[in-house]
Image 1 (cartoon, helix red, strand yellow):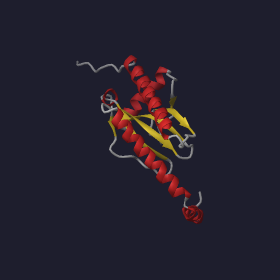
Image 2 (cartoon, helix red, strand yellow):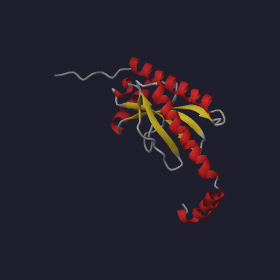
Image 3 (tube, one colour):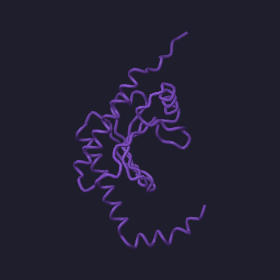
Image 4 (cartoon, one colour):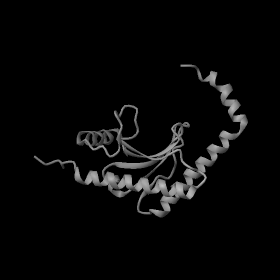
Length: 172
């Protein structure tokens, strides 16, 4: 792998053009507005107070109902920069919870959404593509599409979990 020093002249060249900064700023403003929209429209859901900006790989925020929180799970709205798409992801609060639910989804054979093949190096358990190559010229329609897809993803996950409960530990 080349040293990052070798990439800096191209980085500087692209920054001098100015388009990357404007596009990135607009994208982040949209994602902040999307987060606020979901928070206002769904006050009973948990919405993260901050956005994970990433390293131009992904940007996301959490958005999930109490039913997932009780299980140690949360969902997030994710923008993948290189793939240039929005996705909804199911996360665990920690690696132990993530592993437990990943095994549940894997063992059940549920294939409604993409199960990550391995948890090594992964943040998610399952993923759903919401919008490929989003049209940022119609932000209202884009927001509606992301909102509807995310709510459907959450409802499907809740439905799956309600029919696949973990057995409660019994006393001896």
